[in-house]
Amino acid sequence: MGFRGAAPVTQSSNVTERLVVKHPLDYLKDGNFSDVPLIIGTNKHEGSFVLTIMYTEFLKPNHKLEDSEYLKNDMMIDFLNCFGKFYVFPVPATHWMHN
Image (cartoon, rainbow, N blue to C red):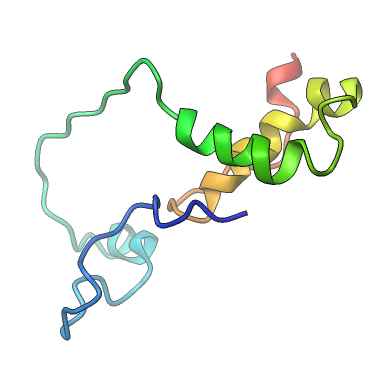
């Protein structure tokens, strides 16, 4: 399931010299990063665009909306794992949200 170009990027495709040349986790392990302040936040509709894509391209065509066990036990894991490939620490396939 793709996000139609709505994934995080660090530079445009027309740049010839790469900004990030190795996995981000390797930069952290090597200590090769700048110690700068960090601002993190969310907005009211964070994830709505991706949820709409998941609904129209996965949940509805695969009849998952009628599967209450899937919706209760597995949908959130699939949703979070859609983001996992874009981040340093992918979401593990655990059942943390059921406890």
